[in-house]
Image (cartoon, rainbow, N blue to C red; front, top):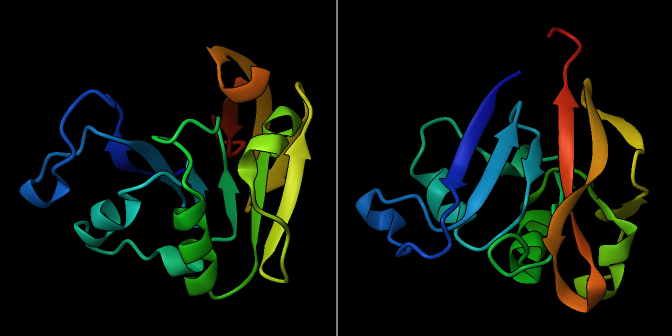
Amino acid sequence: MEITFLGTGGADWPNEPSKGFFRHHASILVNGKILVDPGPGIFEYANSLPGVDLSGLSAVFLTHTHPDHWSKETLESLVSKAKGPITLYFHAGARPNLCIGPTKKLILKPLRRGQTVTVEGTSWLNLEANHICNHGERGSHYIVSDGNS
């Protein structure tokens, strides 16, 4: 499994990706096809790394809807630039906070706790995080496997 970090967290740090400082938002790209957390700034991060092309995304997993992890505008931009449809996976409790509906190029897939889905040869298990979000939403942790380890 190939994991590319597009930011490494620490929302209290300054956001200066143009200066090579990548701590503000946290997002990862798995196997070049699956994005975790479409937060703001990911395009700057992706454009600074050779070989990263977000137009080939097939899926996005959302951990929670805090603004450092979720940006409706970022998701809309990803969808508009995508070569094919993108499936957005999220815990069902996050649905009221998404403010976005399905389109021909965006498929919404709410997940239950303990549910596993297979995407692009990887397995994703949705578990509850102890992170309280908007309107009682709880964050998600994902256990990801490609079957090789």
